Length: 107
Image 1 (tube, rainbow, N blue to C red):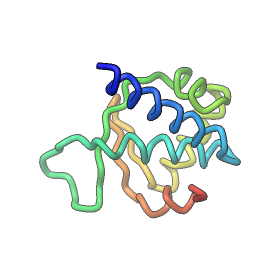
Image 2 (cartoon, helix red, strand yellow):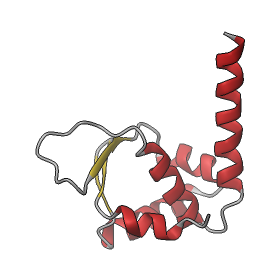
Image 3 (cartoon, rainbow, N blue to C red):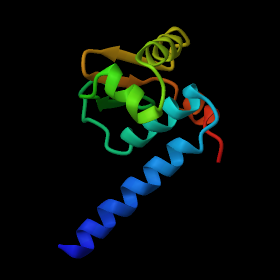
């Protein structure tokens, strides 16, 4: 149990550090979406380049995670949708252009 708690703590610190070191809100949001994409949903009929994820957080909660306002999260998500990088349908988000999101993320 102690090993699992240590692992969970290290993972949480890593995520916080990763988001805190990001330079811009689009980069922070792209990192968060790509992290969620590590555990994709199985969706019948999706195209091979698409990755579906379930997002149960509100925009307010996402804003808190990324250290910004809900309005900014809304604007950035709208921008991602207009560029056809993601598609949002309720709690199911589909990554349509993973390379574009990865291009926002600095290493």
